[in-house]
Length: 475
Ligand SMILES: Cc1ncc(COP(=O)(O)O)c(C=O)c1O
Image (cartoon, rainbow, N blue to C red; front, side, top):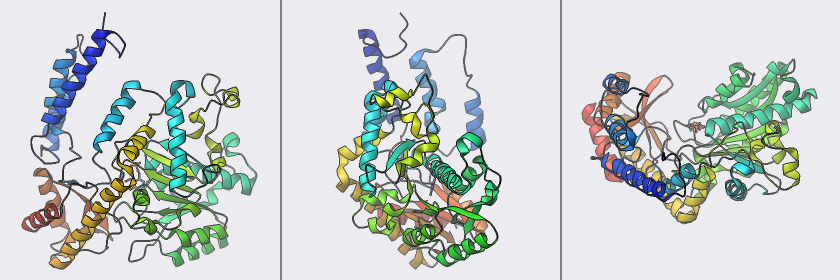
């Protein structure tokens, strides 16, 4: 008989063990050095990969296929665990979360209906309740769901805010009738350095990029509160309808944190939904030393939490929390084959009613597994190590005299430029890449900036000293 899927048959169980062992060995032998990338140039990599044919009449079998993948793919995969990888909010995965991933993919439960993931559903509900507690929301009044990432969590908040506002202001049901006449006056406020998922969502949700006001930031890269208030006043005078504001708790390029207390005051006055994009900064909730930096998060209407950033869990793993569970209403739709209305009456929970996706991974297990395995204390240590590294790096760069370092890091991102100028900074990043060191590049006021996003807790101060030295040599 063909060995196809997991089963109770003895030979299948043996084959599963063999496959897992071989895969683990292949992964471990793929990193012979500590670099983040092999350094192969993009054209050579593309050529090598394109030599693989997708499907042949006869398959190679597991052993030969693994060898091919090792040779052509794994050798050149990015090694996120490397101490030389620090460009993005893209983390290495905690060891125990790799065990959780094995469980998730082996069982392949799905979170759309209870009968596709009985324990998975109950675990997600339980994890969400714990998250509501952690962020100070009422666990009975609030609710949450896992999503594919921060972009989808942000979009979910915008959908909820848009529909709620239109229902109230226009007495119009967006679910049934689409956008009403006049919806082109809806305005969302966020900073000029907020994540571009706000603009993408505005387009996809029929509001358009022009519905997003990108507010100026102050010298700490936080929304300028006066500018925010003045812009709302002007917009209202001009006939626009402010419906939502998004505070970024941990901006992508600087880790800066908007003042959500002041933003709450203003949004409250105008009857607006306040969303916190805490995709990056949410991890601070586990640090007694840095938690306060986030401000009064429980006052906001919704929060994006990304576990695949500073919590160091494998992609994908994100959640959206709403203070008021009714905000999930836009996602609720019944299908006879999936989430029958009578199911709920009988006590079955079908989580498809709380999201954009239908089939959905059991990502909540990774949160439960790692939280239980490490406890808050150990997460705190990890988070504080990264924040300490960023602070150290900022001070070294600042004292050196060869660098422009405009922003003191609130979290774990250091953004800087060598004084030799844009071309030199671009070349530094590319040369480092050839050496297997991957750092970030962005722009600030049109100036090319280099960026270190320090999420990896294995990075030591001495690693940062060596990197800064190498950057100076290249400059
Ligand atoms: C502040 C912020 N929000 C949202 C996102 C989007 O998250 P994701 O990549 O998980 O969709 C990012 C990504 O870096 C981010 O930095």
